[in-house]
Length: 120
Image (cartoon, rainbow, N blue to C red):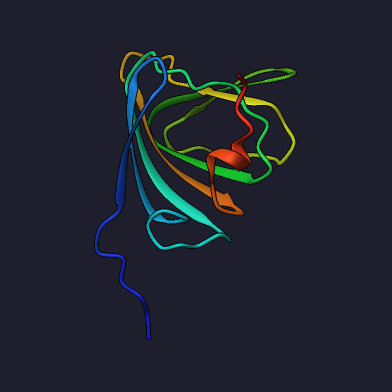
């Protein structure tokens, strides 16, 4: 029988600014270790600490621009575009534009703070 996820587990995460993360599938909402699916709403000027995750992340930008800084430069991902970051790559997510960004993140295996290996 299919499993309906009627609402996400919502997290307010704060780095330099607060973002809203709605986890629909993952460790917190459904106990899944294999995959996480979340919707993120990020204000303009938000920046996440750099990280070297052990998961692959698929980012689908729905609104605005997500900037991904990596060892070789930066990549701006605009609404309607998708980017894949790979395990073991250092990356840093931010929202440089004045309208912030909304995006869907799919992580395989599921996102966890331990697996993100964030910079100190």
